[in-house]
Amino acid sequence: MNNVTNSRKRRRGKPKGRHPHNRLSAAFVRSAPPGRHCDGNGLYLYVKKTGTRSWIQRLVVRGRKREIGLGSVVLVSLAEAREQALANRKLARAGGDPLAEKRRSLGVPTFAEAAGHVIEQKRAGWRSPKTARLWTRKLEMYVFPRLGNLPVSEITSGDVLETRIG
Image (cartoon, rainbow, N blue to C red; front, side):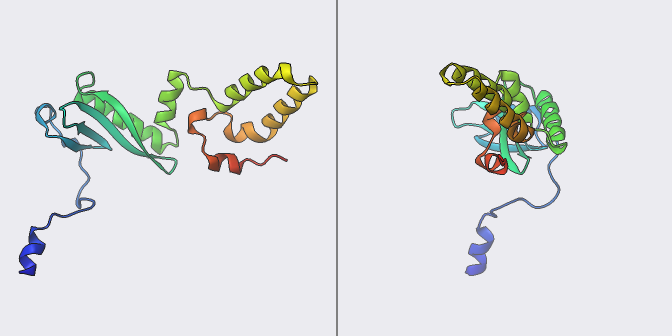
């Protein structure tokens, strides 16, 4: 009896064997059931219960798992999604961050830009004009080399703790 029930159980966990590569077809994309369907290079077709279909790419960027939305199936074809997924994967392997590039194009400021804006806003309230110069100099010496080029949305508490102000 135990052998029968064990053989009927569904296997859980990561699938074994070769990684999928261009597994999905255009016909399957149009008629796929709800769920996530892997195509390869971290590209997934995500079909909701309502029937909406979109492309998602799962990547590891600088040790953190990320999910990047590539768009709706109506707007982005299977071939376009594969091209974008491959480009994102190459960028991530080279040490870049595709999500940060996307946000940068949308206008998320870097830490250096945001710090400059804050210093300009606070300047009128400080008693001495030296204060702005001191703040700027300290940030340039200790913080900007580590965090200056990162988008504000990408900075973690670990990044802040790693910067030491003397």
